[in-house]
Image (cartoon, rainbow, N blue to C red; front, top):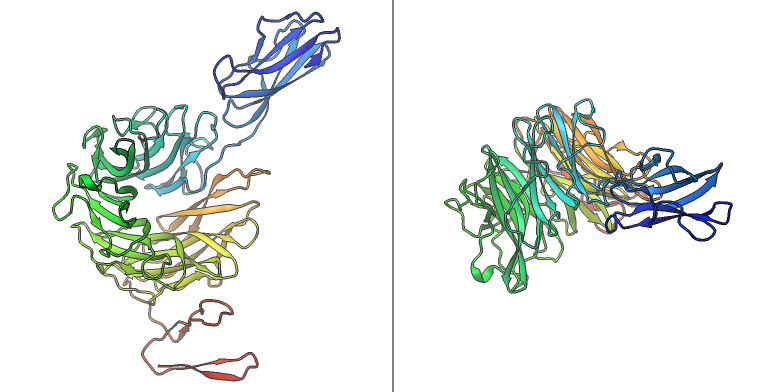
Length: 595
């Protein structure tokens, strides 16, 4: 309130008459000394724009009434104001004039994707700038010089649906169209929607996208999309009522061609289980072409396993595949397998997962599965690099000569990053346990790994050398050696924190996107930033280990002062070798190795 100088007051308040919160509006009234309303009965509308306006303040100066308020009409917080004369007539534009507007929405970590097109880069993300109305899915195309094709902050995949959209996943077609799937709560329950966009960003499946099912299940989640044989393949987990009030997730799929659903209005169940097995919970994690990958929990035994299944063009099960899919590993004892990731290979797909077998420590196992539904490596799966420590945050890339992968290795409570490469036939190409990319007294996390045409690679990660994390990168040559030994190169060390890089290759360059808090104040607000790096790796078209001119001694692990350590080395040919170590007093200790 503010005095009018004659015993009366000007009053301003938040008002919900035009809809429930968060659609608060700002109203005001002039009361004389007798308490009589002098302006519009019920109060005068100062601002009734969409979304929330509240926290109005009022001052009187020079015979005018000044009112300002917090305003979310643009999705992020701004400050607006209006001026009225004593008669209540507005002096400025309807609904006020903006004093300040700041971006308070951000991009949640892990909710973005980067994809190469023919001559530019597509970025898709979940955006909270209109949080009052609901999170939305945005996209941007960036040319090879770093220029955005669309407006600076990107374009939304749909019009507003006044509900949250999240978990986006996208794919690019050979002619540079791109399609996005996401989880959408516009009808109350989270269901999967999809949108197809032209090379220049026009919406082709309606302004609000295409709903994947005619039915309205209580929940759908984890959508994935691929493009294969002129069709879009889509995967999601649907929550089914198996028994009265007893719900479980199962994996579903759909094939879309020319905007038409080919597997019925509601798709088909991919994780096709026997009636007594429907209490097993299945959640999709990857979709490569027409091959679906999911995690299955057997409710009777609590076993957790990884499954793969290829789908025929008509939605049936192809010859050679079981209706329930193929378990990636044939072990049947007490099993805990989690969080699969997958990558296309010339013969099918490579699947990598966390596995707790033998020692109750999560290490990564892998399997190469053909399109005919055969396990091409050991039937139980292959332990990829087990040093007896927890591993997480994997990244995979397919090269011309094999499959390469990186992961975080937990050493004394801090992560270091290691990498390895296997031939498609299942032979390790870089020693038995691979090599460390970075190993120092700080934590590294969330590596991203991409390959160039000559079998060299680029790798980037989040580096916690300081209070705020930064992004580092390096190159891995075809033989597993590093272009920049000793901890990598700074990609960005801007103020505030940077997180979770993702990379793609276009031509002979790599493009890296990450979540960046550089614009944050006291509250962290994450935007997406992007950088381009050239290829500095050494090619090896033949794909084997590069010849060595002499002995190559590698970094020991663990490092630096542990009671036990391992030392790896390469020699150009077999020969006898004596190795000795020195004690701190520089005297010769004992012979450590003879071979």
